[in-house]
Image 1 (cartoon, helix red, strand yellow):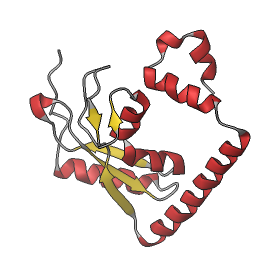
Image 2 (image 1 turned 135 degrees about the horizontal axis):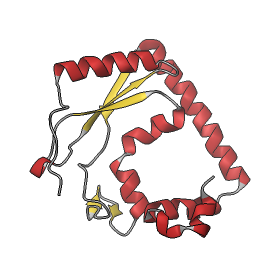
Image 3 (image 1 turned 90 degrees about the vertical axis):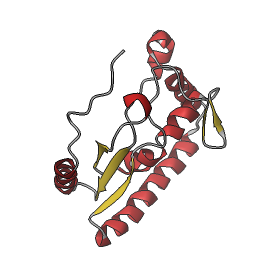
Image 4 (image 1 turned 90 degrees about the horizontal axis):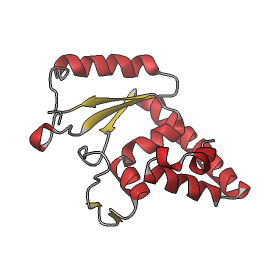
Length: 155
């Protein structure tokens, strides 16, 4: 979808985006077919979960925000700074599953880290096409824990 940008304007893309495009170019049609089948299985499993539960609450990210193009040296035991795509995925492992399954989700700030840097977020995930429940829960959380006045310092 965006592979042409890697060829035409690579300087406009983040290094991890270029890595993901290059990885995508190595995939066969069979690889894509397996991935799509896995997504369908995931959607079916989540549909079953949401027959019993209205929402899933999870962290949004696994690390606090870092300065632009200055990722942490390591996230978890196996992802280091030399692997930009890994750093990106390592920081947001909790969102990818719901991005893949097309479930509605929101992320609500839950405070700030050292020096006022944005901290971890609360991810509120709903059943397929149930955006209204996600938005109601998000509003309720924001009313219980207002955050809009909390701003990190800008340098």
